[in-house]
Image (cartoon, rainbow, N blue to C red; front, side, top):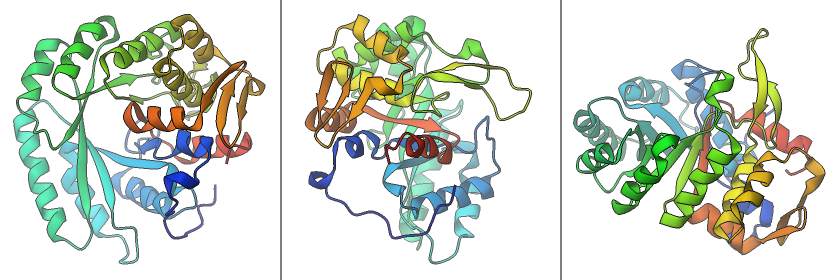
Length: 310
């Protein structure tokens, strides 16, 4: 894919059509992680190129482990002076949250003093129980938006705890093997619980393609393949659930594999006979279904272009 360098988009929200509301800031770039597993210099160079491409309005945050912040600073500092300067980071915490928070504060302080602004806006951390969420919430400062990746088996209790601290949830929607992909029923139940508790969420892994379809799980020629969730399916299901759709219908939507079942107009997006207004889509994206992490930015964008949605 050719990412032609242009100035960052400056559109007003009022000028957007329904699809632009759906895709804006949608993809957090996680090129450091499998299956891409790029080196830091390559991932930073990619994000820099994407941030100056015509599709920069789809690009979200750069995902980096807290243990690699110094490595990120070195790679980021080596970019040309003309490169994009306003980097938004989401950092994965390690096992020592207190130490990690200190490292993030030092990083943000250095960024505020440098010519190249790179700011940690959010953190992401796994939590196995409500008790762990409570403990971590006393350590992570409120100025950092926190996403708790919770186990689906106990996500109900965990989402209640996440809500009580005004934090956000995170769901893992795939991986490098078939067993890492949750069922449509489990994904919809997670989203339904988030909607009921008014908890915003993000997703990660296994969402490289717009529609549910069969693909290889990695980029290796001998990689096993299987059915992967589609990000259009997922984010439309979230908007429909927020607007009152029944759970069973939302599961059917997440299972949908027929491109012709979806219709995109300037003012609305529809799935079969069900419709979402531009305002409903915008409200869901801005305050509920936040983004998804992907080790590829070009792959989902190319797929959207092939569907004539960009």
